[in-house]
Length: 249
Image (cartoon, one colour):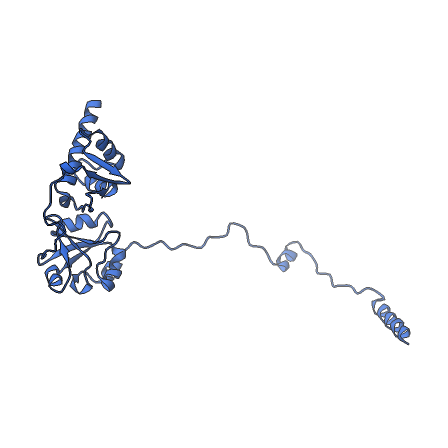
């Protein structure tokens, strides 16, 4: 049992090393300037692979700690390979001319904003665009189970002043993409797929309604007795007025 767990741990460490050090773009990942990527993003990418659906962040942290030679470095929820394990990438930050089309899969809730303002960076200083439709959908499903597939007129955007870089073979980065270069489905069609919150039904009162006074009176056969005037009330008031008048004289 222990040997099997150790084998799985080493196999996971090798997969993580391949992703971080060789081809993060195959898995839809973009490393930052220091070569880090968040543990959550890496966990999502690994769990999509066949046989690795069970992997959690704790499994990756254990694999990183147990790797021979301490190949991994974890810091503040991010992970990277140490320098000697990373394949150098030439021209990573140089502006490049993109292909005719690139692709992006957006969250449905963000689609209305995209149609007004275009694609803008969110959380990172760039917008990651995929070179293939399949990769775009894979990346998009990490944010939305049914993302909105968008086609980007990348070459036309480049010729009109948009900047693109290419850190890897399958991923391009753009500072922003104006809406005129984005093609997608009608907004109404996307809105119909959004899950709707169930309307709250008014709670029915569990306590019986309070009967009106007349209903209670009838139920208990109570008679309404007319108010009785106190005898002498009128004469008493008249005598009091006479007394006040005499004192004023």
